Image (tube, rainbow, N blue to C red):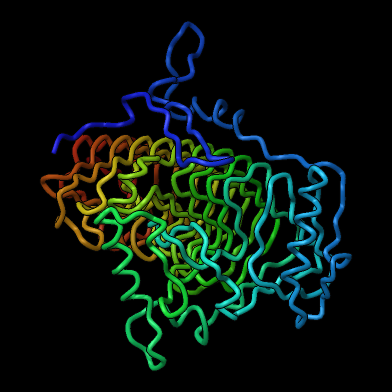
Length: 474
């Protein structure tokens, strides 16, 4: 098949029909910001323009206390209806803040509406019920970046704008081996496993079955994500602590103008990614702490046929000032990446844990395809990682067994230091794939056990790079 690059042509993509549906603007390749003298900006020079577009929503000074709508912070009373009533009242009044005061509030799914800030105060905990039936009826969502009608995410919004989850309180999913997490693997003693339904969903997507007919619920064991704004504009997630999630914690999908700031995530369940922007544009993730059971940040754009069908990349993502503890990767691109990703900037982060596998990680294969380009990392301090500082794995899962060519190009790592790792660089391409134009500048990797692996990489440049105190060249 031709290896065309969609980032080279202009398109406006309407994501869905209906009120509030989001239209993406043309790609940056088609409408690049012009600097002085008409010269196109590239690399880090683009960041100020991206930040100028990312503006957190603001809300009217109206307060709606959930206890005034029947909520009780005793950890036992079902507050689902009270949350719904407070959100409806806030939205109906033109917007404001739905406040959760001190206490422990048990609830089912919370569905946000436009102009509503769900504010969880410092001594408040929102407990999400483990009764799986509470997350029905099904909503339009994604499971591992494939669209379906499935369990509602714990905090969800569809086709809304100006929404937020803020405060210093805690969101507790109450997930554990006795409920949501047990669904991850193969057959277990209870007979509860996501594997058959997951395979069926992937097969339906490959056949092009309409999303409305991909209905999964009780007995299918497809875990919901924690926070998922879907086709929303102007989103803020700030300050809260998230624990015990069934699956991905923060998963904005098909959104524009997203800010995730000052969030603390401590959840070690299966597939417990920290923050996964999926087919999103203009995203800022800053000053967050990630201690996760999977990737800390994983940037995605749809899986396989579904990613190609919607054809919406994730682009213009800025990660800065974050702290990564445990996880599979600090900043990861993939693996559900068939809609492409471009212009990701990560800076001034710290990463350090024997249980953190990689600092910058790319995951792709010939079943996913996708072009991953213009990815930049600078001023990152790595104490130790278990595997590699930079990992590009195009053999991930299905490997080269597929018709689509994974492409990774224009990757720059500058002023990144590490004290301990198995590899410095670990990059593998196969003949039909592409890893090209990788630049490692002013980087110093110490405590490296096995050196570098750079199979099939074209255009690798190393400048002022040392490994275990000795200069290295490509």
